[in-house]
Length: 298
Ligand SMILES: [Zn+2]
Image (cartoon, rainbow, N blue to C red; front, side, top):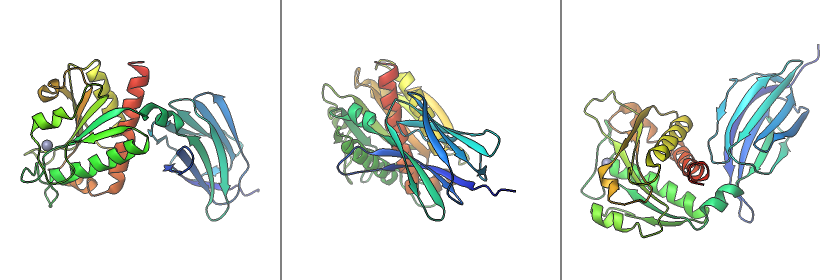
């Protein structure tokens, strides 16, 4: 019997490039070189047809990076596997092959649509608490004021890379008043993003929640889209969305308050130590606002 290559792993990552647009990569690993074909089934669906045997979790792979939504994996019989790459927006793609062990076949998808959207947007990032105001404390030793600063820096860096104008309400140990914080939202602000962690006396409570500005158009829709994107990408439980009185002071400016995790729960505190969590949170948050603007507000 003929021995087929085995597909052992699939993952996504972002490739940042200096002189060209960043790319979303879908990387398929195999035990040996394999024949494949990449076709565009429609503007938002690429299909990588590959000859080999599936030796891994059959997916789907939730990508949610703004350009790629997910990858569906189908065994199509006769030693053939289809990897269906579902795009959120039409974008150009090509394939590269890296021989070695494992063999890697990467589908590259341009992230230009995301950059074009964020170019020139004005966004305020507001890490909660600061200085003597520590916020909630984790069961081991993490403080809310520190983890929200990590998240804020990760999101700000990603936004600046995309060409957005970013204002932050604090960069270190200062603790501006709420009034000072919302003053950063000048007329024409596209999004005000406040970052917190939830704290609960019930230490079994965990997960992510989002509060929104009810005076902003479709504020609840934006909150739901963001919660769905973040919890799918990070695999955090969803604690729901609710309107927020404080955010109403921003008038019609779209505003969210992310409770990124429940720091008083030991599982969530562990997750808050993982740098991958902040990267996933950033990708999902930026992806959600982009798609909200595209689909809901035109
Ligand atoms: Zn807080």
